Image (tube, rainbow, N blue to C red):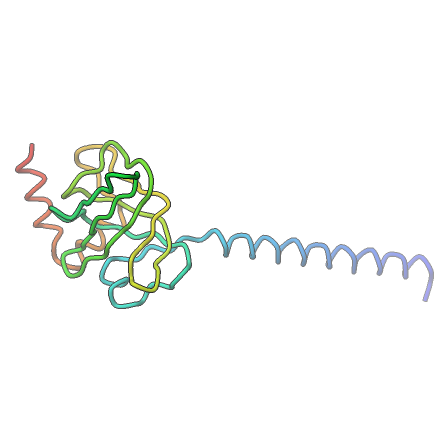
Length: 154
């Protein structure tokens, strides 16, 4: 084989190898950063993976918020009308967090089925609800009930 062609072939093979490594690393990084959304019903049925960061959301159940007097830890239940899941969060909750409102929590489900959250997101205005929570409520048939409660509060 001609030395010039051999050199070109090696450069092309090295370029393809570099592109393959870059694509592989990008896919690995994306896989680690994907947070799938699970409803309380899916978590209660055990469909959510353990020790994997997920997003979960629903309505904070009335009377379920328990604050630890010694720390910033808060435990509350989030439901979608069919099931509810306990969420434990250590930190300062958003100002708009309250019972009966839609939230999304990011964290990991432990062996007891409790979502240990590292971030809690609350709605940002009176009529907003995260799209995932809205969809979960529609699937459980509770969305109309929530809309009625929201209109009563206005």
